[in-house]
Amino acid sequence: MKPGIKITDTELIFTEFASKETGIVKYCKSFNLKLNEIKLIGISPRLALDDEIVFILVIDNEDQIFPIPDNVIGTKGLENLEKHFKLKSIIEEWNKFEYDDHYGKIDKVLYPKERYWADLFEKDWKLNFRTLYSWIKPKTFYGSLNDKNGLE
Image (tube, rainbow, N blue to C red; front, side):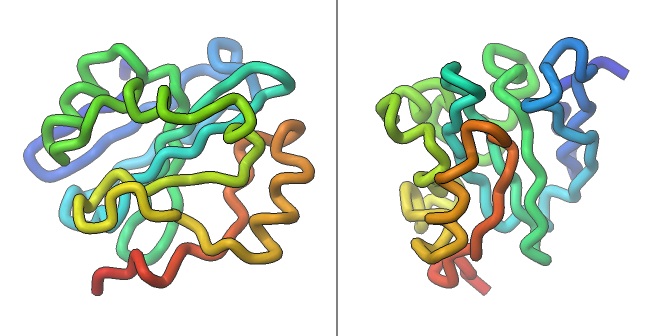
């Protein structure tokens, strides 16, 4: 199957890119999620050494985090995700961040609209700890999801 995002009537399917293509720091595993089980979609800007990268984070009803690398930017699959969830352009959202925002200290909610641009994670010791080493391991998402985003 072709790597990237596919949206069906009922599912979000992400097929991983080969680690040779993304590099090990951006490699994300394949997953399938039912669309009605998606609670939050967020954006997580990071540094991979000194390169600015971004992950799209899909969080399900059980608070599991499914990352998608920025390799999907400019693809039809991402465009379909943006349309289905009525998201603004991911690239435009990413452009709102400054270089210093890529140290793992800022992650923002894009969906649902009621929580747009809220902090995805609580500002606690886990988030502070993550900022110390996120440039070495940019795909770390340790942190407590912000309770205000629960929307039960």
